[in-house]
Image (cartoon, rainbow, N blue to C red; front, side, top):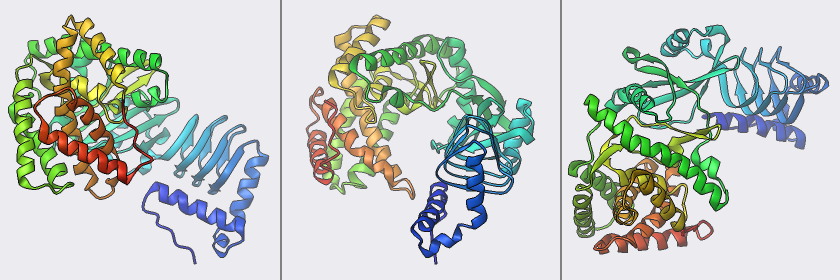
Length: 446
């Protein structure tokens, strides 16, 4: 007997790998690997392809010489072009692929999605020659899929109006692009079907590009991003104001309080189970902080300017996920970018980048840095609350691993902001607890 959960693409690949390993070890489950499947793999190698690891092939699969197939399932009739690199992939029946391929790829005609079919026809692409690959979920009740047709690719988005800002993405993209902000081009808009197609700008985020780069390289990459942020905060802001563009609710006290409530309910109460008296003390401190931020001059904010929402193509940053843009203090965006827990920038790098932004806008750098850390406290409490909320949802428990990094960055911000003793004690306790639970993962962004 052999049992394996097939609930996800990763599970499906793991089941195939398990059968392959069982066959190699001579275990009974290896009998599931049919003799014909083994013969197909041998013929693959004789034809000039390069199988690695394990490969599961359907009938009439064609793989051109020089292609490399590793730990993948190719269903009936798949065609793999010369020099392709297929790794950890599931290729549906009749799919044609070239280049580097991972994940799931199926024929668009077999996807059974009328909205997707309409988008492909709207692009003028032949449906029979188009394939589709689902992308990782990004939240906000949106579904992202990458479309392929020959050497062309594009990003299809279908969305619901449960979050009304989803309908603003295309309009916002056109305004930002006209103002000189680097954002994906809109290739097709179908508002009646709640769908659109965007230019494919790749998968490499700011976090991927920075990686373990030396300090000088990190500064240069972030400066490129900040040049775009300055345009967003100035030219795009002027264009939005001139057109009186309806936007999401601006950052005023009600929105700040909503973020405080998220932090209090999801993290302080939901995760730490703190007594109401301590939660009220933190809320009172955050209220004072918000009133100070509320006096800052507004700019047009991206609203979620974390590293995963900045993609790089050809060395140029491209901003995505700006459907929630609104007016608010510049330091909120700056904190989202420079205090992103995913990135963990060093303190001296943050300061240098703040000075760069201030110089580009003609602002006083010291004054900007003072209010920046208040914005960082606001943004990081929101982020930690969001991580706590998401981690409580089925299948999204992994978000909890971002909480310790968020707490450590929040601890740094609190070193620069006075009169928040209740929050400071809770954050210090949270950091200590995280270090006790995972002593090998205690990177401190200092």
